[in-house]
Image (cartoon, rainbow, N blue to C red; front, side, top):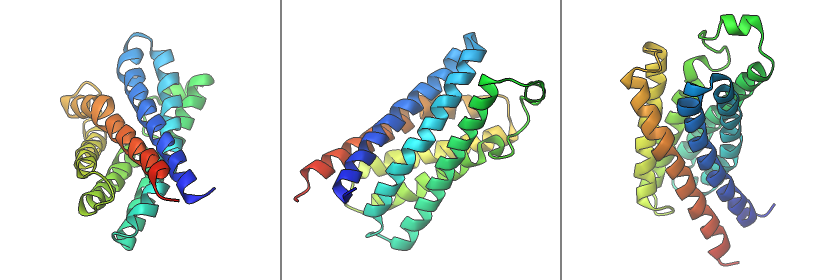
Length: 208
């Protein structure tokens, strides 16, 4: 796949990741409240999709941002990729349990996942990766600077969300609920969709 074609593909995937992230927040915070079984299944599937879609986006970002600072861009790519795969694994595990519930899983429903304890990869590492990527965006002239600032805000909320899940745990606590709502319904989906539009537009308008 040619570089511009991949960038356009990554842009569409970013838009899909933003849509899936918004639907994940709806399933996890709204649907699960009235229908736990359906909410659990949908949120698991959507988390899996977010992780997979975002891998292409991170690759396209690295291709652009390595000209700004190659070492830091590589570090951001590694952090973001580990976070994305962690989200995909986390979602895949939850989806498997939702489709075929087992008594042991039900008994340990609140126990931390062995692959992604309390969202260490999904929120913590992914947040650090987004923080570094957004810092590079702000430093460069390759993307709108507002996209970088939006990413910084989203990254901080992701890290706060991980710390809240690790220390407080209760989903009704404002330390968890506020970052989950603001980031899940607004900042993170908007960042992915905006990034996707920039990548798609750049791929199709760049001189051949």
